[in-house]
Image (tube, rainbow over all chains, first blue to last red; front, top):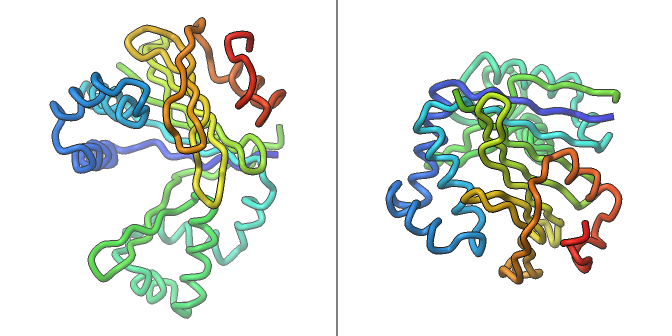
Amino acid sequence: MKLKIIKQYSTKDVKDLKQNIILNHGDAEKLKQRAYRSGCRNPDLVDDHVLYTVLNKNATYHHEHISRSAKSISALTPRRVELLAYLYKNDMESIMDLANGLMRNYKNVYDDLKALEENDIISLIRRGKNIKPVLNADRLVIDFG
Amino acid sequence: MMKVYRRIIDVKNGERIESLEIRKGDEMVYYSYNYKIRKEKVWKLYIRWDNYQNQPHIDRYDENENHVESIPSREKNLKEILEVVDIFGKNLISMDLSRV
């Protein structure tokens, strides 16, 4: 049994991804030079350089996390699924905003988010004083194969 | 139109493959398959199969993720890599990868 966490990136998601690559490496030319120089001594640089190059040519981007652990599936309690559905429809700037939107206690929402983050279903991104919950999936598939 | 597929596949407890595939139609333009082991809550790269600059090869890394060696290889695909990891698991670290 597998849990598939699937996300097809929108044009905006791809733009953000490209921006993040450049933020991590300075600029595109520096990234290219460093990737050529280091080769497989620094494989992340190589992948980022190749990825950035094709995303600039309007490639589409599909992300999938396949977990074979039943623990990932058990992380999906009814309350957490409700939370994920809410997050899918509403862009939340902070955990407090999410707790208010769901009309739930902050600590319980925080604990649920941490459990979902542990299973890579969401990411918690620090933005100044806030922590922004971001959904890593637009589909969750339980595959019995 | 090119398509990028990024996958994280938890193969066994504490072992995963992180892959990046770029396809143009049916043709595989680029691939990298990274075999990682979780140590003290950090995923560390040990073996990587890729075809960077159209040269399919295997790279091996030590426990500090320093590059140890590069071995030429034929083109690989994700299905083959998953089979190899399923069969050999952590034994891959000390195996002669040119025979795998």
